[in-house]
Length: 182
Image (tube, rainbow, N blue to C red; front, side, top):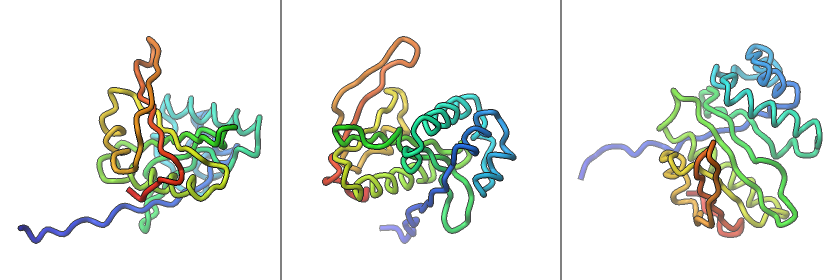
């Protein structure tokens, strides 16, 4: 038996990325996105993939402002205040009460427990909402890190989908009333 200390689980809080911040990030304007969000965002937030996603979310929010509380937010490490990624839902619950989670960790903060902390916070939020019956996660079959991240949270693989461009992705779900802290 070793006397190694078990590290404390990472903790995150979420900071809203409103329509203006999302649009600035989609346009590649990190300084403006950071100023509007009120936190120092990382270059990761204006990479090609992030710009595409933030543009999509800005358009989604413009079409349905009520979706705002469900969409992407900056994930800030507590207590140090460093932005370590972004996380949120793909939108409000659908007619069947399904919400889908999404999260991304800034590369230099990966493999430190932040994805699990983000996912844990998203699941707690979803479980607290009366209109949510199921939480879904869709993960690329080659994304070993995300596949490992959802372990311990009660997800069950329910299917797969894919195309030639993106490859195969596995679809996982967990009933909101079965959510554990992971």
